Every structure is written in C-alpha cells, then in structure tokens.
Image: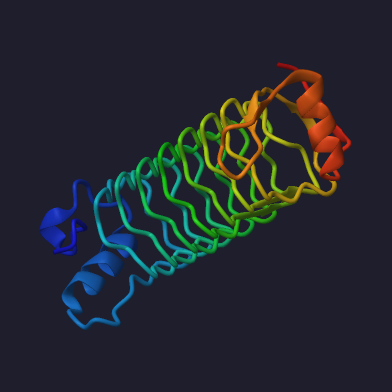
Length: 220
C-alpha cells in the first residue's frame, strides 16, 4: 500500500487561487491510473500538498512559492520554469523530475530524493539540500550560490558552467562532472566510490582542478 495520499480529504491546505483548487479537484475526481494533475501556469500559493501522490504532475511555469510538498511524491513531475522560492520539499521524492529553469531560491530539499532530476539553468541560491540524494542529477549552468549540500549524495551528477555551492561538508561526489564550475566551497568532501576518502583544503582544491574545475576555491 502506498504511503502517498490521493484524495481531496488528504489536502492539508488548498491553494488560494480558485483555478488551482479546481485543477486539484478535477484530478482527484479522475480515478483512472493514467490521471495526472494538470497545473501548468496556475498559482498554487498558500497550499500545503504534503504527502500527496503527485507523480507525473504537469506544473511547468506554475507559481509554487512557499507551497509545502513535504513527503510528497513528485517523481517524473514537470516543474520547468516554475516559481519555487521558499517551497518545502523536505523528504519528498522528485526522482527524474524536470525542473530546468526553475527559480527555487531558499527552497528546502532536506533529505529529498532527487535522483536523475534535471535542474539545468535553475536558480537555487540559498537552497537547503542537506542529506538530499542528487545522484545522476543534471545541474549545468545552475546558480548554487549559498546553497547547502552538507552530507548530500552527488554521485555521477553534472555541476558546471556557473557558480558552485558554498557548503559541501561531507557530500559524496564520486564520478561527478565539473567542467566550467567556479566559486568558493566549504569541505571536506568524500571523493571515492566507497565514501571513505575525505579531502579538504589544498587537497580538495587540487582534486577539483583535476576534475576540470580549476577555478573552484576551497575556503574550509
């Protein structure tokens, strides 16, 4: 039995917008296995959609600033160019979600599952990714200034083309691609497949340089 919810009675707080509320109600009313929430360009502000099964939802260009998605399922969802500033995705499943160009400054992704998520050209400044799983994620030309990826898993992900995050303490970064990455980071970082080799300071800076990120500066 799924731990995710799929009924109107499971909504903690409905969005303020009547159009967004109607889209949710129509989705709940469709019991077919292929039904997806159609919320492109809608305004869901004010909503708490925690624990809902929103897999495959269409939310591109939607306004989701401050919306709560704690422990929700957003796997394969389309959040392209969505406004996500301050949204809470703590413990949510966003595996393989399309989030290219989204604006998610100060958003919370603590302990979220972001396996193979597409975050190219996204704005994630100040976002909290502590303990998140970002294995195989794409973050090319993504603004990660001030983001916190402490103890996150970033294996085989792509980071480059713009400023790197600030805090990487304890992050797992085996197999990453960093071409064109730049900025100041805080280590140490676990760099081997078994997550047993921890590098910091000059050693970590040399490791970044060897990965094609010679403009990354280690400050801690």
